Amino acid sequence: MEIRPALHAYLEWPAQQNPMRAATVAVIEALAGAAIELARTIAAGSLAAIGGESGGINPDGDRQKTIDIIADRLMRDALRTAPVAAVVSEEMELPEVLDADAPLCVAIDPLDGSANLENNISVGTIFSIRPKTRDAISTFFEPGTAQNAAGCFIYGPQTVLVLAFDQCVDCFTLDPRTGEFVLTGRDLQVPPDTPEFAINASNRRHWSGAVRGYIDQCLAGVNGERGQDYNMRWIGSLVAEAYRILMRGGVFLYPADARQGYREGRLRLLYEAHPIALIMEWAGGAASSGRARILELSARSPHQRVPLIMGSTRAVRDVDAVHLTVEPLFESSDAPLFARRGLFR
Ligand code: F6P
Ligand code: MN
Image (tube, rainbow, N blue to C red; front, side, top):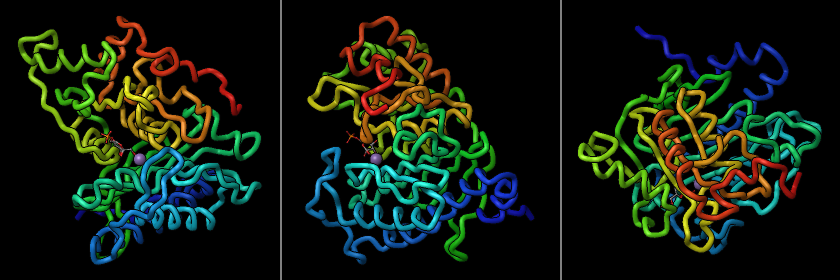
């Protein structure tokens, strides 16, 4: 019978290697504990009376649900028990310093896709871990290559943890019988050749010529330049899209567009694009803004947005190639301006 190690047992060996890895493992385990509790609350749905609006608005302008607040509290309380110097959360305007002497900094989206919850669609928690550099706060303004681990918990038909650690992406499933995450997928690789794309097509008229050009090529199917028929998926929940791409391949795009407030796309660099990009790259895929590698970009502010194209390397390169033939939509958005030093650095 196949032996499936539990998360704690699986991380025991790396934790013994050096203090930085031990600290990183402590953060992952603290978050896993909070995720198990959050999964239970989410699974109770209407029974837990968590569906309502809290009345608050998060720093990026999204309406906060009660469950967003619960998730944020659970995750930040867990991080207080781990060696974390500072945390950036989607639900807080500014970074919070926890223990300035601790070795790690964490950026977190406590409940990604929470607007989907009332429809019983998968939601998740995304996290990004990086060693503290000069001081806790400036660590967040280093490029995404500074991350030493990242991952996401997905609360769906199964609760899973996708973990990028030690250059490798593994998957763990929460066993409801024991309440433990156990290893169910080792060294995941993004399937390279799936003709499938994901984009919110209702925004087509606002896209740049590059994005429209690429999607039109996909839609033309066997008769078009790409020479094959494409399938389309759009869940509206980033964690679920990332998981599907890890399992099935394909490409996901949330580009910049001409709507007010979308000049740098929709997704946030520190706690959405950076960690998802680390997962994609360590699983043999890629992530780009269309004009720059996501992991080479640095945030100018905690809630910095960025266009995100992720998935199989070939598909992401194809989207990049179309961008090269077209002028940027806006000077400041899908051009890699903030690969340079920004205001906060
Ligand atoms: O966190 C932002 C998010 O909810 C993602 O999970 C998802 O990919 C995206 O927004 C969906 O955006 P839209 O509603 O514009 O399609
Ligand atoms: Mn999110």
